[in-house]
Image (tube, rainbow, N blue to C red):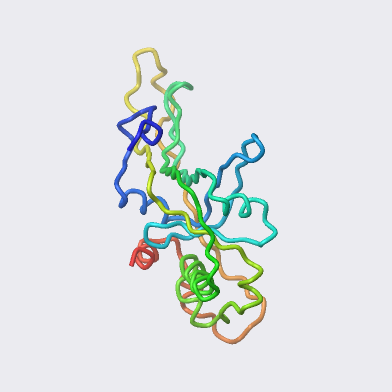
Length: 218
């Protein structure tokens, strides 16, 4: 750990154990990747998957972002969940309940076609467990057209807030509603494009839930 990785504001909310990091990473599939190109900051949203102590990123071989990251330049990856809006008696004390992670590191490109194909399967399973049992594996042409990067999770911090706003101050109004408006991601019903028969259970039962996260961690 260095000062760069330690949470500076509200230090009591910071966590630095890998289990806390996984709890944030494994609960979503979108990250924001930040780097500097030609002296200018760039931040790009991307799909990702965790593979043990690594993050996996992928995209077209024509991607400027992946081309830059493959050079081994420093990168910062962030993931954030907003779990609730915190309403207080004063405007100043309004807040949000959140979970966030910040990862620092350098990525390297995976060039072995077999490993790239395995990563494709892993990333699909990370998002939709059970899907690779039915979908066709990536072929040589598809793996050759895709850049795959592996980012080692070595330096990171986790920060979160939970709970209500806190007690009402003496000067605050007593008749104003205070509390938390919970926010979460829900899965809607599947929208079938072609009907092969019965919708598979792994699709109809798909949820961002604890069982799915446990399958990821395994």
